[in-house]
Amino acid sequence: MPILRLIPIVALCCTPTFVGAVTWDKIGDTGLASVYIDKDSVRRSGSEARAALEWRWNSPTEVPDSGGAKHYRLERQVQISNCTNGGYAVAEGARYADARGTDLVSSYKYDERALPYMEARPKTIRETIVQQVCKMLPATPKKP
Figure: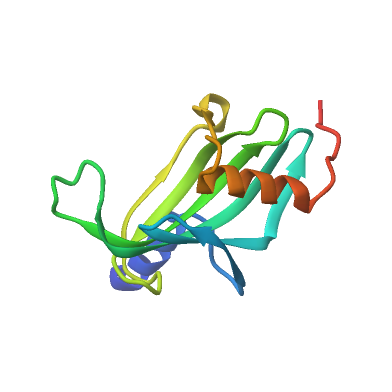
């Protein structure tokens, strides 16, 4: 197989899994971005709920640690919400230069055993996300 045919396959293997027929439902606005959720992605285990989010930024946003060289308009994330204490952590994400999510400019993934959970402060979009995700599915027993 020619090397040029392998490049797209390698690129697909290294980006977060947000592909497929996804329906994004709007959760709210932050003033800087509109936030959407893929309700079919929600999975719950014990006190934690995982969901795919899409942030549609109103203007180009600088990619962290790029020195201003890269900007994105769309960010897709996997957020893990703690339904007991209202905390959350972002497990992985991908940033796209275009508003359609085809021009990948950066991606990230964290070790889920060491995720830094943060407080979803009252009256913020993160609190709204945690509340909505945690209401979607009943708690399932956590596997030992």
